[in-house]
Image 1 (cartoon, rainbow, N blue to C red):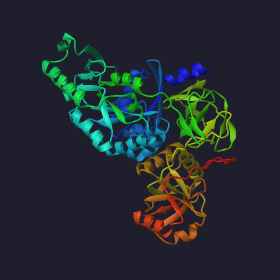
Image 2 (image 1 turned 180 degrees about the vertical axis):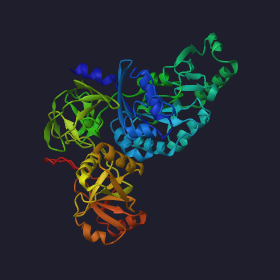
Image 3 (image 1 turned 120 degrees about the vertical axis):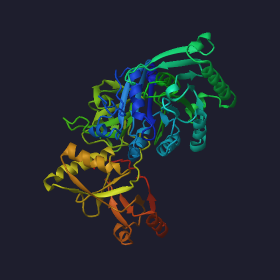
Image 4 (image 1 turned 90 degrees about the horizontal axis):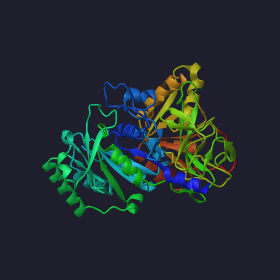
Length: 542
């Protein structure tokens, strides 16, 4: 068992792709699946006359808008590696879902638009990766269009993000003249040829040593001279590459290519799987949990309702951290304080699921959820004291009162709000002494309101009206002498309760928040919800 566990851990690679919207993340995801043999024809969300939608975009709203608004789990095997690709929302209004997904990843691929460089959303997501100390790999995309010089992009990574880069390969040409990439380690040029398939299938590729006299059959003398000049400059003035710096996130291995045309995708995937780390230890309240620990443990980082509209089911996505998961096994649920049966496990290709018998550290599996899981829950075999570091709940920035347009469908609205809040799509707050009458929803990005209305109507049959509120900050309050009713009288704020009954104050603006902090130094105003770790059973539901 020990040897099998070590072997399976070494095979796993679990990573997420982060980028600013429109950098080509969904397209790159599709092409990695194409080269991994998981799909046979890639569909790009950019194609206006596309016959297909992207595999990773399964929700109808995503197909209509051509954007990713949910996280998908995509799993495939390539070169004997078991790859778990966590596809995340690209739109900045759904960054909270991306933050949660990164908690389940061992590495991140940072996608950069060659013309635009480092963009605002990339900065935010990079900071999250930095805080978690996970390795970051950079893929500079859209070399099939004219963009900024590679050296300029390297400089921007250092100046804006504060990270040094090491180009693992180097582009030959740009725009219509983009011919291929040069592998610095192997001293091999990969020359690509477009065959009119618009990137739907694998691209024809030829490889030749830069020291071979045959190189001039593939590159012109001027192209070869420019490449040699760039390589010499990198060798003299660039950083040296070490696995230690890469694994610790101090240095980002850098790759160039075009996801749209498939140029450079396979060389990137080959190198990434060699360089990316296998699953590592995770911090718990009682110390680190090694993946080779024979006892199973994992945590829930995402919940998705209604992936199968015909069954209206709920799936809890769990990252396996240690040991071997076996179908139907029991594990201790740390928040509920009791043993639960881990039923109906599945692996995923976006919305398509396959029943599985077992899973290993690094794998992400879906568990049937009868309503007993929440984001951040820890599940451990034969242990009552294991609890992984919680997945954070972030402070919303936009708020609205939810009203049902049809009083006869109010129960459907309440059920939908409860389930979507457990997914993390929205946060639900109760006004004091009002229960679920006129609940308040909070979201991190305004587009989430649109998704909320869409999903409530199409998945639960409940049409709603949203009355926007003038608040911009939410803070959880910690303090023994906090009196919600007298606190509200001071104006510019409103006290509510979250799903766990914890007091939360909504503030109109920065001034109102600062005024409260100055006037009440005995209270703490927290931007993240206090972690609840139950030692006694907690009621399920919200």
